[in-house]
Image (tube, rainbow, N blue to C red; front, side, top):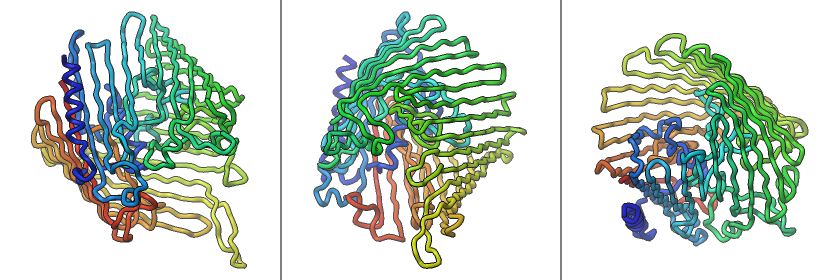
Length: 599
């Protein structure tokens, strides 16, 4: 009865919120640049033991004792949109409404059975279920650790063979993205339309041994040439125009494989993972330089070994096309105040794995060599230092005749010496080879290899006035210069933020940002608080102001209402956006609303 009632409530919420585009002129849509981060947070914030990021500040998890026979249903309904109609809607190029819709239901029967169903529609798409995602899971029954029918992801080793399609990368937490310890088989209920498998998978545990098998058959979207070859996989997830729809579901991918691992307490973990993939059409990616054929296979072995305060980890993988990639590292934690990490990676330029996502500058674990060292120190109470240095090279370059070199440096100082005030200072520098054109003595364009140097400085101050109010001030300054050509750009950003928690029922966060940059190249990316489950990091560039208000109210113990309104105005342009996404003016305001109901 609860399940039937839940479905009815789910449908009512959706149909109540999903009016025509003319009846709802007040609601938001995420840009393509924001989608990657949203997908990451939709997955990570739904994991019980995932790292809590700032975005979850309004939805701290509540852990209940679960009865064997208890049924719980969780509903999430979100709609959002830009208030201005982009050129694609005015000209009839986009076939759907400008509303972005996200509807999700999760059902749990005791501790052993769960299911999920998700309908998602991007702005401009026609149907509310343009993307459908779902699963049924049975777990923890004798030797069966997990059985999933439907959509799932698989995390193994250090990500060279299988990993989710998104992950954390370099930052103040030196282990985020560098040291991976996957949970292997997990259900997938997210707006990510690419980095998951669809079919059936099972994982068994017996004593210290874990074994998993998986099978996936799903449709991919691709660009196909006149010879019926797939020249690229279409991964944006947008199907708004006739051209985009023509690429949809025209390629079948069949994947099957297994994993076996052995663990001994927290001292040792050894694993072997492999799979084979077949495609319905011949692939010729990157002009045939990346991968050519209709099938490939990957096998990899991984390890984590712990000796006291020292932890060794790594993975080595081979493809059926006779290319290999490897990553290995060491982490030392002599005390709770000290953490050191070093990692070396060597990824062959011909290595190809659609679901590989190890640590590195580029996605996929190919064409990259590098050495990374990081450290976290807390020499005295209320003070912490974090930093890393990463040296990397791309051996085969499409734009240069020789390898592209680069490096990145990062340092952050955190202080809590003053009561109720948290301060951190951050510096990041990234240098990489770039091909540019300059004028020679005869006023001719000449291509040279230049060094791009990007420096970023940040000051962040949090002031906790009392248990109800918190203020944040941040100033960020960025320079981007070319060593030989002399090109030089500057970006600046200043914001102030207020967080209010009046009670357990109400929370409000508002922010105003002033920014100025010479171009997008020197724009500053800014993390924004958003609706629960959404993480937004837009790049602020040009000259302008952006502000937003985010509020969450717990109407009942089981019903949360969240809403966000944001407004961006740029003084340096007459119109924002380009192509079919161009807005009619120099401002962009958006609104979104979300309901979370659990019973």
